[in-house]
Length: 489
Image 1 (cartoon, rainbow, N blue to C red):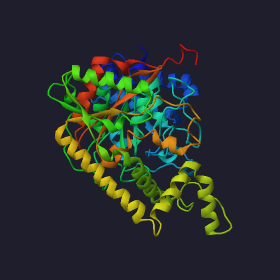
Image 2: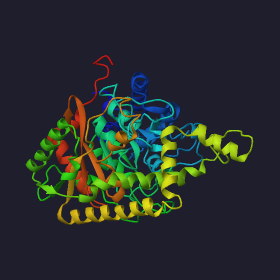
Image 3: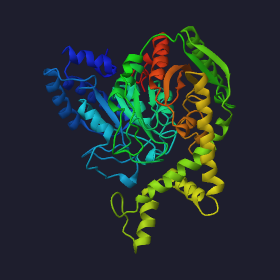
Image 4: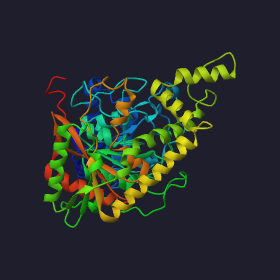
C-alpha cells in the first residue's frame, strides 16, 4: 500500500511502531500532491514548508511517546478556516491576500494534537455552492470522472481525501457542504450537531446553519477526528457545553436493537433510478446487520426545507458579508469617493453566486417583505425541527440518500441556479434542524459514487458512527479508490 493511501488509524500504527516517520509520510503525500494536483485542482495553497516543519516536530513527539492518533498525520483544511500566517481566501478575490493573525479553534486543537497541515482546500466562494464551480480561482474535478463536479462547497477537501492528497480534512457544512461532496467522492463526511464543534475562526456564511466537521476515508477516522475537534469553546457563543465521549467506543460491527426509519420524502421525484437502487440495497444490508427498518416514515414538512433555506441562508449571508467594504481588510478598490470605492470593491471582489445570494437576502429582509419571507421561513424551520424531534422519539436514526443523483457534469447546472440548489435537497433540512448527519459510501451507479446519509437526534454522533461503521465493515465500498493513473487521466 502507498503511504499516501493510508487511513488515520493505519498511519498512527505505523508511526507508533516507528515503521515510518512523520517526515517520510509527509514527503510521500507531498510528492503525490505534485503528481495528481494538476489533474484535480483540490488545493488553493500547498503548505509544503509548514508541513515538513510540523512533521519534524511530530517526529520529536513520537520519539518521546507523546503522540495522539493524529500526530504526524497529513491533513487539509478548507480555505474558510483561519490559519495563522497562512492565507485564508474563501476561494474569493475579496480575501485573495488575507493572512489571518490567529488560528480557528479547530486548527488550534489539531495543532495541539500534532497535525501536519499540507494545505488549504479549494471551495465554492464563501462556501456558497454545490459543485465547486463557484471558486474564484479554478474548478476542482471529481477524481472518479474528471469531467464531473466533486460537489460543494467542500469539494477541494473531499477530492484531496479521495485521491490521497491528504489523509483527512476539515470541511464546513451550511446546507450539505461536507456530506454532498463526501457522497460524490466516495469518502465519509460528518456534519456534527450545531454547537458541538466551535465555529470560532470559521469565516461566516450563515451563522445559524454553519458547522465544521470531518472528511475522512472511513468511519473510524471520523470518530478519531471528532475526539479532537468536538467540545465547548467560550469564544463561540453558539458552542454547547456538553460532555464529549470517546467516539471510537461506538464502533461496533452490528446493529442489533436499533430501530431505523426511512423517510419517504427523501426519495424525491427526479431521483436517479440507479441511486434509488443502491439505497434500497444498502438499507436491506442494514436489516441484515440486525436493525429494524420502517419504510413508512413521513416528514411532511421536508418539501418546504429548500424554500426556507434559500430565505434564511442568503439573509444571514447578506448580513455577514456586509463587513467586506474595502476599509478594514481584504480587497479594496480606490474609488472617486467612499461610496464609489465600496460599490467597486464589492462589485469586483465578489463572484456572481455570492452577489446572487446577497441580493436574495437583501430582498428577504427588506421593509415590507421581512414578515412575508424571513419570518415565515423561521416558522417553517421550527416545524421542520419539531418533526425531526417527533421522529427521533420512535427511531434511533433516519436513513436517506445523500444526494438524489450521482455527480453531474461540470457546466451542466452552473447557469441554472434552481437545478443547482435542488442537488442539496436531501441535506438542507439537517442544517435547518441543527441535527447531526453522516454520509458514508453506499455503492456505485454507472461507475460513480453514491452516498448514504444517516441522521440522528442532537448529540447522537455515537449512534451515527455505530451505524456507519457496521455498514462499512459489511460492504467495503469506501475502500475503493479512484484510479487516476491507471486510466491515464
